[in-house]
Image (cartoon, rainbow, N blue to C red; front, side):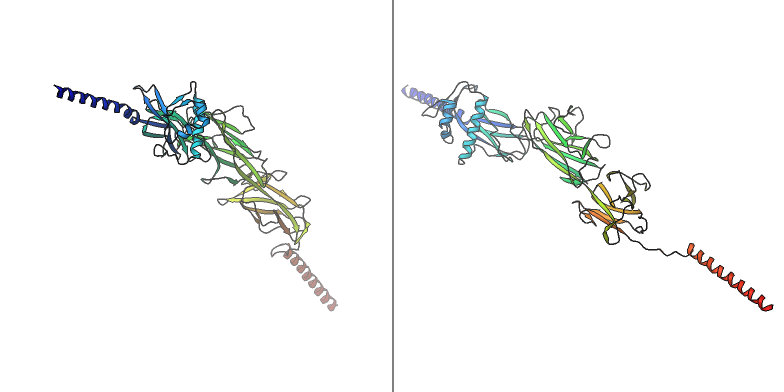
Length: 477
């Protein structure tokens, strides 16, 4: 009987010991997970357990926090301890102050991130994960109070969030990413920051927005054009908005009216359309106007505003418009100016001549294939000067159609080139000098000159015959 009782007691003690071990083992080893939604591709995420959980009940509704070896000095630091905890016991168990809210949690996270930066020996509690999609998941985590941070940003970013794993599986949203905006000019299927154009030409622009904030909302693109450009949105030159490869329809975005800040347009993408890691592209056109700066910068700028008060810096592109002067002079003497010469300027496209039409101020208005159209012929003024403004880089031909009185007209056009940098050739300081020469032109065979010779020659022959007849009559008498 005694032996049976001893065996029973031994069994009960074993069960009791097993149960006593089971509770802390469950508390320490119960696996948890942290899922980060709206994660930003290319950014690296880490998790740090700054407090352990000492005990909890089966429903995870009541918890007792305890310090750990890695973060004990941080928890016991004067600022942190006095602000967030009523007491920190000798056994490491802490008593949290009543009434702490989300702002307090954020401030604690900021302090923890700063501490982490100054104590590089503190290691993460899981292998770092570099996001390749919009979701990052940390699994098999011990329960505790975690700090989640990200790295790989172009500039310093605050702590992503801190969280209390009172339940084993927690989801948080990335909120600290700052969207970026990039602006380019589309030219020959390439994108560039600077280009050249002539008055009347269309310039295609492209804006790219990388959506890397966690909860994208109130996305507005602001575009500002200098006086040399005007915004165009028509069938031939439309605005196209895409998210990835999908083209948005006009129910998914719209133009704000009235426009503020002197912008050419303000385009808002409706809330709910965008999600983290989306790429937005907007292509649109501007046309070069007669107000374009000649041999200077004509700019187009764009910025993004988002959320409650987020904004980017202005991103700028530049379009240059060129021009040059023509001086007409006699021979090699550039001081002997010749007013009254008539010219026309043309370019060749696919074997066809296009003639430039200029206004009275020498500003390009259009191009025509009609060499006799109004505005094509220009006359050097009393200073022997012509001003030809509003041209793109390229090759042009300056053809003299009438020389000043007493001078010979050029026998071939002058080829003028303007480089992408605005260098005019042949020219001196941007001025093309064109000379005329004087001199008689010998008459050609079959012209009035030979007729004159025939008339004179015939007259001499008649006179000779008359003299001969007269002489014979006198001899006969």
